[in-house]
Image (cartoon, rainbow, N blue to C red; front, side, top):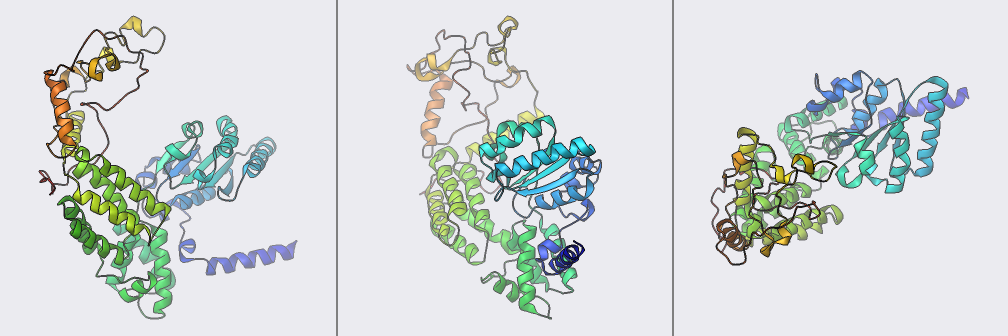
Length: 471
Protein backbone atom coordinates (compact mmCIF):
# COMPACT_ATOMS: atom_id res chain seq x y z
CA UNK A 1 0.00 0.00 0.00
CA UNK A 2 2.84 2.36 0.85
CA UNK A 3 4.43 1.59 -2.50
CA UNK A 4 1.18 2.37 -4.26
CA UNK A 5 1.00 5.74 -2.48
CA UNK A 6 4.60 6.47 -3.45
CA UNK A 7 4.00 5.73 -7.12
CA UNK A 8 0.71 7.66 -7.04
CA UNK A 9 2.46 10.69 -5.57
CA UNK A 10 5.22 10.52 -8.17
CA UNK A 11 2.63 10.31 -10.93
CA UNK A 12 0.85 13.38 -9.60
CA UNK A 13 4.13 15.33 -9.50
CA UNK A 14 4.92 14.43 -13.10
CA UNK A 15 1.40 15.29 -14.22
CA UNK A 16 1.76 18.67 -12.51
CA UNK A 17 4.78 19.46 -14.70
CA UNK A 18 3.58 17.80 -17.91
CA UNK A 19 -0.07 18.87 -17.86
CA UNK A 20 -1.23 21.45 -20.41
CA UNK A 21 -0.43 25.04 -19.51
CA UNK A 22 -4.11 25.84 -18.94
CA UNK A 23 -4.35 23.04 -16.37
CA UNK A 24 -1.13 24.05 -14.59
CA UNK A 25 -2.28 27.66 -14.30
CA UNK A 26 -5.75 26.85 -13.00
CA UNK A 27 -6.41 29.12 -9.98
CA UNK A 28 -6.68 27.56 -6.54
CA UNK A 29 -8.25 30.52 -4.72
CA UNK A 30 -10.87 33.12 -5.51
CA UNK A 31 -8.24 35.86 -5.53
CA UNK A 32 -6.35 34.10 -8.33
CA UNK A 33 -9.36 33.99 -10.65
CA UNK A 34 -9.21 36.38 -13.58
CA UNK A 35 -12.55 37.81 -14.70
CA UNK A 36 -16.10 37.19 -13.38
CA UNK A 37 -15.84 40.12 -10.96
CA UNK A 38 -19.64 40.27 -10.80
CA UNK A 39 -19.59 36.79 -9.23
CA UNK A 40 -16.31 36.43 -7.33
CA UNK A 41 -15.04 39.99 -6.87
CA UNK A 42 -14.97 41.56 -3.39
CA UNK A 43 -18.47 41.49 -1.92
CA UNK A 44 -19.90 39.56 -4.89
CA UNK A 45 -22.69 37.05 -4.10
CA UNK A 46 -21.06 33.82 -5.28
CA UNK A 47 -17.84 34.69 -3.47
CA UNK A 48 -19.75 35.25 -0.22
CA UNK A 49 -21.46 31.87 -0.50
CA UNK A 50 -18.21 30.04 -1.26
CA UNK A 51 -16.23 31.71 1.52
CA UNK A 52 -18.93 30.99 4.09
CA UNK A 53 -19.33 27.40 2.81
CA UNK A 54 -23.04 28.02 2.31
CA UNK A 55 -23.24 27.32 -1.41
CA UNK A 56 -26.51 25.73 -2.44
CA UNK A 57 -27.19 23.85 -5.67
CA UNK A 58 -26.05 25.94 -8.62
CA UNK A 59 -25.77 25.92 -12.39
CA UNK A 60 -22.69 27.63 -13.82
CA UNK A 61 -23.55 28.75 -17.35
CA UNK A 62 -21.09 30.37 -19.72
CA UNK A 63 -19.00 30.02 -22.88
CA UNK A 64 -15.94 27.75 -22.94
CA UNK A 65 -12.89 28.99 -21.09
CA UNK A 66 -14.69 31.37 -18.73
CA UNK A 67 -13.87 29.51 -15.49
CA UNK A 68 -16.71 27.12 -14.72
CA UNK A 69 -14.46 24.18 -13.83
CA UNK A 70 -12.06 26.55 -12.07
CA UNK A 71 -14.85 27.81 -9.81
CA UNK A 72 -15.79 24.25 -8.99
CA UNK A 73 -12.18 23.40 -8.08
CA UNK A 74 -12.04 26.44 -5.79
CA UNK A 75 -15.22 25.26 -4.08
CA UNK A 76 -13.57 21.86 -3.58
CA UNK A 77 -10.73 23.44 -1.60
CA UNK A 78 -12.97 25.83 0.36
CA UNK A 79 -15.73 23.50 1.54
CA UNK A 80 -15.90 21.15 4.50
CA UNK A 81 -18.27 18.95 2.52
CA UNK A 82 -17.16 15.98 0.46
CA UNK A 83 -16.56 17.11 -3.13
CA UNK A 84 -17.31 14.58 -5.87
CA UNK A 85 -16.43 15.58 -9.46
CA UNK A 86 -18.18 13.80 -12.31
CA UNK A 87 -18.49 14.31 -16.06
CA UNK A 88 -21.89 13.89 -17.66
CA UNK A 89 -20.11 12.70 -20.82
CA UNK A 90 -19.01 9.43 -19.18
CA UNK A 91 -21.30 9.05 -16.16
CA UNK A 92 -24.66 7.32 -16.09
CA UNK A 93 -27.59 6.73 -13.73
CA UNK A 94 -25.65 3.96 -11.97
CA UNK A 95 -22.83 6.38 -11.13
CA UNK A 96 -25.31 8.95 -9.83
CA UNK A 97 -26.95 6.37 -7.56
CA UNK A 98 -23.57 5.37 -6.17
CA UNK A 99 -22.81 9.00 -5.32
CA UNK A 100 -26.22 9.35 -3.66
CA UNK A 101 -25.69 6.25 -1.54
CA UNK A 102 -22.21 7.42 -0.56
CA UNK A 103 -23.60 10.83 0.39
CA UNK A 104 -26.28 9.22 2.53
CA UNK A 105 -23.72 7.08 4.39
CA UNK A 106 -21.37 10.03 4.91
CA UNK A 107 -24.15 12.19 6.28
CA UNK A 108 -25.32 9.45 8.64
CA UNK A 109 -21.86 8.41 9.86
CA UNK A 110 -19.99 11.73 9.96
CA UNK A 111 -22.64 14.43 9.57
CA UNK A 112 -20.88 15.76 6.44
CA UNK A 113 -22.71 16.88 3.36
CA UNK A 114 -21.71 16.16 -0.24
CA UNK A 115 -21.21 18.43 -3.22
CA UNK A 116 -21.54 16.80 -6.64
CA UNK A 117 -19.86 18.72 -9.44
CA UNK A 118 -21.37 17.60 -12.74
CA UNK A 119 -19.42 18.94 -15.71
CA UNK A 120 -21.31 19.24 -19.01
CA UNK A 121 -24.59 18.78 -17.16
CA UNK A 122 -26.52 19.37 -20.39
CA UNK A 123 -25.18 16.03 -21.66
CA UNK A 124 -27.31 14.23 -19.05
CA UNK A 125 -30.61 13.14 -20.55
CA UNK A 126 -33.95 13.66 -18.78
CA UNK A 127 -33.97 10.33 -16.96
CA UNK A 128 -30.43 10.89 -15.70
CA UNK A 129 -31.34 14.35 -14.46
CA UNK A 130 -34.48 12.94 -12.84
CA UNK A 131 -32.30 10.52 -10.87
CA UNK A 132 -30.61 13.51 -9.23
CA UNK A 133 -33.77 15.41 -8.41
CA UNK A 134 -34.88 13.70 -5.15
CA UNK A 135 -31.41 14.00 -3.59
CA UNK A 136 -31.11 17.67 -4.55
CA UNK A 137 -34.64 18.38 -3.38
CA UNK A 138 -34.12 16.90 0.09
CA UNK A 139 -30.70 18.53 0.44
CA UNK A 140 -28.72 15.30 0.50
CA UNK A 141 -26.66 16.56 -2.45
CA UNK A 142 -25.55 20.05 -3.36
CA UNK A 143 -25.33 20.01 -7.14
CA UNK A 144 -22.96 22.22 -9.07
CA UNK A 145 -23.65 21.80 -12.77
CA UNK A 146 -21.50 23.38 -15.46
CA UNK A 147 -22.79 23.95 -18.97
CA UNK A 148 -22.08 25.92 -22.12
CA UNK A 149 -25.67 25.43 -23.30
CA UNK A 150 -28.74 27.42 -22.33
CA UNK A 151 -29.91 25.64 -19.16
CA UNK A 152 -33.51 26.71 -19.73
CA UNK A 153 -33.52 24.35 -22.71
CA UNK A 154 -31.11 21.66 -21.52
CA UNK A 155 -31.78 21.24 -17.79
CA UNK A 156 -34.98 19.82 -16.34
CA UNK A 157 -37.22 22.62 -15.05
CA UNK A 158 -37.63 21.02 -11.58
CA UNK A 159 -33.86 20.68 -11.23
CA UNK A 160 -33.27 24.20 -12.49
CA UNK A 161 -35.86 25.64 -10.11
CA UNK A 162 -33.96 24.13 -7.17
CA UNK A 163 -30.65 25.65 -8.29
CA UNK A 164 -29.25 29.15 -8.48
CA UNK A 165 -28.20 30.11 -12.00
CA UNK A 166 -24.85 31.91 -12.25
CA UNK A 167 -23.95 33.38 -15.64
CA UNK A 168 -20.25 33.60 -16.53
CA UNK A 169 -19.13 36.12 -19.14
CA UNK A 170 -16.32 35.94 -21.74
CA UNK A 171 -13.09 37.50 -20.51
CA UNK A 172 -12.27 41.01 -21.67
CA UNK A 173 -9.18 41.91 -23.66
CA UNK A 174 -7.39 43.23 -20.58
CA UNK A 175 -8.25 40.09 -18.62
CA UNK A 176 -6.92 37.88 -21.41
CA UNK A 177 -3.71 39.92 -21.46
CA UNK A 178 -3.31 39.12 -17.79
CA UNK A 179 -3.85 35.43 -18.56
CA UNK A 180 -1.14 35.58 -21.23
CA UNK A 181 1.21 37.37 -18.82
CA UNK A 182 0.74 34.61 -16.25
CA UNK A 183 1.40 31.97 -18.88
CA UNK A 184 4.61 33.65 -19.99
CA UNK A 185 5.76 34.06 -16.38
CA UNK A 186 5.06 30.40 -15.64
CA UNK A 187 7.17 29.35 -18.62
CA UNK A 188 9.88 31.94 -17.99
CA UNK A 189 9.32 33.26 -21.51
CA UNK A 190 8.55 36.50 -23.31
CA UNK A 191 6.44 37.57 -26.26
CA UNK A 192 6.47 40.50 -28.62
CA UNK A 193 3.61 43.00 -28.16
CA UNK A 194 1.94 42.23 -31.51
CA UNK A 195 2.05 38.51 -30.68
CA UNK A 196 0.21 39.14 -27.39
CA UNK A 197 -2.30 41.34 -29.19
CA UNK A 198 -2.92 38.60 -31.75
CA UNK A 199 -3.37 35.97 -29.03
CA UNK A 200 -5.94 38.13 -27.26
CA UNK A 201 -7.77 39.09 -30.44
CA UNK A 202 -8.21 35.48 -31.53
CA UNK A 203 -9.33 34.05 -28.20
CA UNK A 204 -12.90 35.48 -28.21
CA UNK A 205 -12.94 35.72 -24.41
CA UNK A 206 -11.75 32.13 -23.88
CA UNK A 207 -8.89 31.87 -21.34
CA UNK A 208 -8.23 28.19 -22.08
CA UNK A 209 -8.01 28.90 -25.82
CA UNK A 210 -5.51 31.70 -25.36
CA UNK A 211 -3.28 29.51 -23.16
CA UNK A 212 -3.51 26.59 -25.56
CA UNK A 213 -2.41 28.75 -28.49
CA UNK A 214 0.31 30.33 -26.36
CA UNK A 215 1.68 26.91 -25.41
CA UNK A 216 2.01 25.88 -29.05
CA UNK A 217 3.58 29.22 -29.94
CA UNK A 218 6.08 28.83 -27.08
CA UNK A 219 7.11 25.44 -28.41
CA UNK A 220 7.67 26.95 -31.85
CA UNK A 221 9.62 29.89 -30.46
CA UNK A 222 12.01 27.82 -28.38
CA UNK A 223 14.23 30.11 -26.30
CA UNK A 224 13.45 33.34 -28.15
CA UNK A 225 10.44 35.61 -27.53
CA UNK A 226 7.17 34.56 -29.15
CA UNK A 227 6.49 36.45 -32.37
CA UNK A 228 3.41 37.11 -34.45
CA UNK A 229 4.66 34.49 -36.90
CA UNK A 230 4.74 31.91 -34.09
CA UNK A 231 1.10 32.68 -33.28
CA UNK A 232 0.21 32.39 -36.97
CA UNK A 233 1.89 29.00 -37.19
CA UNK A 234 0.23 27.88 -33.94
CA UNK A 235 -3.18 28.67 -35.43
CA UNK A 236 -2.32 27.39 -38.92
CA UNK A 237 -3.39 30.69 -40.43
CA UNK A 238 -2.06 33.99 -41.69
CA UNK A 239 -2.90 36.86 -39.34
CA UNK A 240 -3.33 40.04 -41.30
CA UNK A 241 -2.24 42.45 -38.54
CA UNK A 242 -5.18 41.11 -36.59
CA UNK A 243 -4.80 42.96 -33.34
CA UNK A 244 -7.47 44.47 -31.10
CA UNK A 245 -7.94 47.60 -33.22
CA UNK A 246 -7.94 45.75 -36.53
CA UNK A 247 -10.27 43.12 -35.11
CA UNK A 248 -12.96 45.66 -34.25
CA UNK A 249 -12.35 47.68 -37.41
CA UNK A 250 -12.93 44.64 -39.61
CA UNK A 251 -16.02 43.57 -37.69
CA UNK A 252 -17.36 47.12 -38.03
CA UNK A 253 -16.69 47.13 -41.77
CA UNK A 254 -18.36 43.73 -42.09
CA UNK A 255 -21.54 44.77 -40.29
CA UNK A 256 -21.78 48.12 -42.09
CA UNK A 257 -21.35 46.39 -45.46
CA UNK A 258 -24.23 43.99 -44.79
CA UNK A 259 -26.35 46.80 -43.33
CA UNK A 260 -25.54 48.87 -46.42
CA UNK A 261 -26.92 46.11 -48.69
CA UNK A 262 -23.59 45.31 -50.39
CA UNK A 263 -23.31 41.50 -50.55
CA UNK A 264 -19.91 41.63 -52.29
CA UNK A 265 -18.36 43.76 -49.55
CA UNK A 266 -19.97 41.55 -46.90
CA UNK A 267 -18.45 38.45 -48.49
CA UNK A 268 -15.04 40.13 -48.74
CA UNK A 269 -14.91 41.00 -45.05
CA UNK A 270 -16.28 37.55 -44.14
CA UNK A 271 -13.50 35.89 -46.14
CA UNK A 272 -10.89 38.17 -44.65
CA UNK A 273 -11.99 37.51 -41.07
CA UNK A 274 -12.13 33.76 -41.60
CA UNK A 275 -8.71 33.80 -43.23
CA UNK A 276 -7.38 35.72 -40.23
CA UNK A 277 -8.63 33.02 -37.88
CA UNK A 278 -11.69 34.80 -36.50
CA UNK A 279 -13.97 32.58 -34.44
CA UNK A 280 -16.88 31.57 -36.69
CA UNK A 281 -19.21 31.60 -33.69
CA UNK A 282 -18.46 35.28 -33.15
CA UNK A 283 -19.30 36.06 -36.77
CA UNK A 284 -22.51 34.05 -36.53
CA UNK A 285 -23.57 35.89 -33.36
CA UNK A 286 -23.05 39.25 -35.10
CA UNK A 287 -25.24 38.16 -38.01
CA UNK A 288 -28.02 37.01 -35.69
CA UNK A 289 -27.96 40.41 -33.99
CA UNK A 290 -27.95 42.27 -37.31
CA UNK A 291 -30.95 40.28 -38.57
CA UNK A 292 -33.14 41.91 -35.93
CA UNK A 293 -31.28 45.20 -35.49
CA UNK A 294 -31.12 46.26 -39.14
CA UNK A 295 -33.73 44.15 -40.95
CA UNK A 296 -36.43 43.13 -38.48
CA UNK A 297 -39.92 42.84 -39.92
CA UNK A 298 -38.80 44.10 -43.33
CA UNK A 299 -37.78 40.46 -43.89
CA UNK A 300 -38.75 38.19 -40.96
CA UNK A 301 -36.96 35.29 -42.66
CA UNK A 302 -33.63 37.06 -42.11
CA UNK A 303 -33.50 36.04 -38.45
CA UNK A 304 -34.36 32.45 -39.38
CA UNK A 305 -31.50 32.35 -41.92
CA UNK A 306 -29.01 33.93 -39.50
CA UNK A 307 -30.01 31.56 -36.69
CA UNK A 308 -29.74 28.57 -39.03
CA UNK A 309 -26.22 29.66 -40.00
CA UNK A 310 -25.24 29.98 -36.35
CA UNK A 311 -26.54 26.48 -35.64
CA UNK A 312 -24.69 25.14 -38.67
CA UNK A 313 -21.44 26.57 -37.31
CA UNK A 314 -21.95 24.51 -34.15
CA UNK A 315 -23.19 21.39 -35.95
CA UNK A 316 -20.94 21.33 -39.04
CA UNK A 317 -17.93 23.41 -38.04
CA UNK A 318 -15.29 24.94 -40.26
CA UNK A 319 -14.33 24.83 -43.03
CA UNK A 320 -17.71 23.67 -44.38
CA UNK A 321 -19.74 26.08 -42.23
CA UNK A 322 -18.19 29.03 -44.05
CA UNK A 323 -20.69 28.28 -46.82
CA UNK A 324 -23.57 28.64 -44.36
CA UNK A 325 -22.15 31.95 -43.16
CA UNK A 326 -21.74 33.14 -46.74
CA UNK A 327 -25.36 32.31 -47.54
CA UNK A 328 -26.50 34.25 -44.48
CA UNK A 329 -24.35 37.25 -45.47
CA UNK A 330 -25.84 37.32 -48.98
CA UNK A 331 -29.42 36.94 -47.70
CA UNK A 332 -29.05 39.64 -45.06
CA UNK A 333 -27.24 42.05 -47.38
CA UNK A 334 -29.92 41.68 -50.09
CA UNK A 335 -32.84 41.91 -47.68
CA UNK A 336 -34.85 45.14 -47.33
CA UNK A 337 -33.63 47.08 -44.32
CA UNK A 338 -35.47 48.50 -41.34
CA UNK A 339 -34.27 49.44 -37.88
CA UNK A 340 -37.79 50.14 -36.62
CA UNK A 341 -37.77 47.15 -34.24
CA UNK A 342 -34.54 48.48 -32.70
CA UNK A 343 -35.96 51.99 -32.36
CA UNK A 344 -39.23 50.66 -30.93
CA UNK A 345 -37.45 48.65 -28.27
CA UNK A 346 -35.38 51.69 -27.30
CA UNK A 347 -38.53 53.77 -26.86
CA UNK A 348 -40.17 51.08 -24.76
CA UNK A 349 -37.05 50.70 -22.61
CA UNK A 350 -37.00 54.46 -22.05
CA UNK A 351 -40.54 54.33 -20.68
CA UNK A 352 -39.74 51.31 -18.51
CA UNK A 353 -36.64 52.95 -17.04
CA UNK A 354 -37.81 56.55 -16.74
CA UNK A 355 -41.56 56.59 -17.20
CA UNK A 356 -44.29 55.86 -14.67
CA UNK A 357 -44.64 52.28 -13.46
CA UNK A 358 -48.35 51.83 -13.94
CA UNK A 359 -50.35 48.88 -12.71
CA UNK A 360 -51.45 46.04 -14.96
CA UNK A 361 -54.98 46.93 -16.16
CA UNK A 362 -57.59 44.92 -14.28
CA UNK A 363 -58.98 43.25 -17.41
CA UNK A 364 -55.51 41.86 -18.23
CA UNK A 365 -54.75 40.42 -14.81
CA UNK A 366 -54.62 36.69 -14.13
CA UNK A 367 -58.12 35.35 -13.59
CA UNK A 368 -57.28 31.67 -13.22
CA UNK A 369 -57.07 31.33 -9.47
CA UNK A 370 -59.97 31.02 -7.09
CA UNK A 371 -61.69 34.30 -6.12
CA UNK A 372 -59.80 36.31 -8.78
CA UNK A 373 -63.08 37.29 -10.40
CA UNK A 374 -64.41 38.63 -7.10
CA UNK A 375 -61.70 41.31 -7.09
CA UNK A 376 -62.23 42.24 -10.72
CA UNK A 377 -59.37 40.35 -12.35
CA UNK A 378 -60.14 39.69 -16.01
CA UNK A 379 -63.39 41.66 -15.95
CA UNK A 380 -64.06 43.27 -19.31
CA UNK A 381 -61.36 41.38 -21.19
CA UNK A 382 -62.28 40.82 -24.85
CA UNK A 383 -60.94 37.58 -26.34
CA UNK A 384 -59.43 38.59 -29.72
CA UNK A 385 -60.12 35.25 -31.41
CA UNK A 386 -63.85 35.84 -30.97
CA UNK A 387 -63.60 39.03 -33.04
CA UNK A 388 -63.46 39.63 -36.79
CA UNK A 389 -59.81 39.82 -37.89
CA UNK A 390 -58.90 38.44 -34.41
CA UNK A 391 -58.48 41.99 -33.14
CA UNK A 392 -60.10 43.75 -30.20
CA UNK A 393 -59.93 47.46 -29.43
CA UNK A 394 -58.83 47.37 -25.81
CA UNK A 395 -56.04 48.81 -23.71
CA UNK A 396 -52.98 46.55 -23.20
CA UNK A 397 -50.73 48.89 -21.22
CA UNK A 398 -50.94 50.90 -18.02
CA UNK A 399 -53.17 53.94 -18.53
CA UNK A 400 -50.25 56.31 -17.96
CA UNK A 401 -48.54 54.96 -21.08
CA UNK A 402 -51.53 54.28 -23.29
CA UNK A 403 -50.75 57.04 -25.80
CA UNK A 404 -47.04 56.30 -26.28
CA UNK A 405 -46.23 54.90 -29.71
CA UNK A 406 -43.12 52.69 -29.98
CA UNK A 407 -43.26 50.70 -33.19
CA UNK A 408 -43.69 52.64 -36.43
CA UNK A 409 -43.09 50.22 -39.34
CA UNK A 410 -41.39 51.37 -42.50
CA UNK A 411 -42.72 50.87 -46.01
CA UNK A 412 -39.93 48.44 -46.94
CA UNK A 413 -40.40 44.77 -47.72
CA UNK A 414 -42.76 42.77 -45.53
CA UNK A 415 -42.92 45.66 -43.06
CA UNK A 416 -45.14 47.52 -45.52
CA UNK A 417 -47.75 44.79 -45.02
CA UNK A 418 -47.36 45.10 -41.25
CA UNK A 419 -47.73 48.89 -41.53
CA UNK A 420 -51.02 48.60 -43.40
CA UNK A 421 -52.37 46.07 -40.90
CA UNK A 422 -51.47 48.29 -37.95
CA UNK A 423 -52.96 51.31 -39.71
CA UNK A 424 -56.32 49.53 -40.07
CA UNK A 425 -56.25 48.38 -36.45
CA UNK A 426 -55.19 51.73 -35.07
CA UNK A 427 -57.64 53.82 -37.09
CA UNK A 428 -60.48 51.29 -37.27
CA UNK A 429 -61.33 52.38 -40.82
CA UNK A 430 -61.59 48.88 -42.35
CA UNK A 431 -64.73 46.74 -42.51
CA UNK A 432 -62.78 43.76 -41.23
CA UNK A 433 -62.08 45.45 -37.92
CA UNK A 434 -64.70 44.72 -35.28
CA UNK A 435 -64.98 45.11 -31.57
CA UNK A 436 -68.05 43.18 -30.49
CA UNK A 437 -68.93 42.00 -27.08
CA UNK A 438 -66.50 39.10 -26.86
CA UNK A 439 -66.28 36.97 -23.79
CA UNK A 440 -64.40 36.87 -20.57
CA UNK A 441 -60.98 35.45 -21.35
CA UNK A 442 -59.67 32.48 -19.47
CA UNK A 443 -56.18 32.78 -20.87
CA UNK A 444 -56.53 29.72 -23.07
CA UNK A 445 -55.37 31.66 -26.08
CA UNK A 446 -51.95 32.23 -24.54
CA UNK A 447 -49.99 35.43 -24.92
CA UNK A 448 -48.68 36.98 -28.07
CA UNK A 449 -46.68 39.89 -29.39
CA UNK A 450 -49.18 42.41 -30.69
CA UNK A 451 -48.64 46.02 -31.73
CA UNK A 452 -47.61 46.94 -28.22
CA UNK A 453 -45.59 43.80 -27.56
CA UNK A 454 -42.13 43.87 -26.11
CA UNK A 455 -39.07 41.80 -26.82
CA UNK A 456 -35.38 41.44 -26.35
CA UNK A 457 -32.75 43.10 -28.46
CA UNK A 458 -29.93 45.56 -28.46
CA UNK A 459 -29.97 49.29 -29.01
CA UNK A 460 -29.08 51.04 -32.22
CA UNK A 461 -25.35 51.62 -32.55
CA UNK A 462 -25.80 55.00 -34.15
CA UNK A 463 -24.61 53.88 -37.58
CA UNK A 464 -27.95 53.16 -39.20
CA UNK A 465 -30.62 55.41 -37.71
CA UNK A 466 -32.35 55.76 -41.09
CA UNK A 467 -31.13 52.96 -43.35
CA UNK A 468 -31.99 53.22 -47.03
CA UNK A 469 -34.03 50.60 -48.86
CA UNK A 470 -32.18 47.69 -50.40
CA UNK A 471 -31.76 47.69 -54.15
